[in-house]
Image (cartoon, rainbow over all chains, first blue to last red; front, side, top):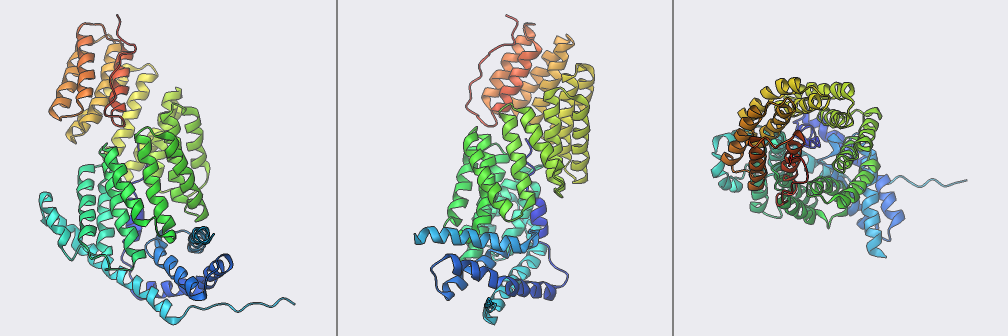
Length: 95
Length: 396
């Protein structure tokens, strides 16, 4: 049985060293700025939490994305999806 | 008139903090790209334990590199993959727990254990694999933002549970993983889940349903990674063999072989080619099956894949019995027993093979007995304690 699950290609992409480090850094900054509002909105609308608690959660989602963002076909969907999961989990805890 | 709310902007400190974490990881990846492989090559494997305390390996970048090396070696050199993954776990145990933010550390440490579990699965040590994967899960279960990493690990668990015959648990996990990968639009992993689902159906003997599941994936129009496509085409070919559709089987098995060769995975190409040998036997051409399988068996032996060589040898034995060449079948069966004994493989397999050899020697073995023994030996991979019960096949 071969499940084709060696993940070689995922790691190949993940561990690549970019030609232009400055360019990658700018992309990360842009990613944060572009999606911050949408993620904050999910946290604040679904949870009884303060702005600073929501910001902390958003920060964590971005940190979790750091290793995967290169291999993710749709970063927006990824961030929103993970944020939704995290918020649902936290909402269960609040209930 | 609706009032539009102001768009929130993150503080510059938060943006800078995220960019800094990215910069650190990039720097570590660059360092790991030139240090990790030479370090492994320069150190004998039995001395790798001391590398756990080497500061060059105690970074996230280095651990990702070790994960890449382990995954690259998985199919062709699972023992090596296991050694690398075990080293990665030892590194995580030696690292200071506060070296990084917990959201960075937890998944990397968890993936090290997950990779160890995967390598153990490839070695057939499935109980130990589940243990390692469960440890991986425990490391990240407190962090809901790591849902994606959790799903990757749970996928590995689902696949390993199949090896242990725990199909309903596997299926439930696969459904959970599919749900998340679909939500995150991760098509590649979604396809892997579909493939694993198909394999599960195949294991249950539902070859037509499995085939439909595979063909649906192929027809989905998704840009599926080459390695997954190679695995898919082999699985499709195998289903067609079982369903007796020779032409379709041949087409897909050849496609799988080509893809594995392009990926420089000669062993996997060989395994797909071995399925073609089975096909020739199933379509009533035992001569061709023998001609086809003999060089493949030699290649398996050359690569120390004794079990694969044995399974391949049993296909040849079956073909020889169909052709009523019992003396040759007996010689080959004895060789397979010797190979299994010399390689210290499962003693139950040796017992079953010994029984088969004696039955052939007494000219009381049929082709179906060979098939039973072959299936039994294969089943020992997932259930190493299973007893051999002769159900049919002997002529008395």
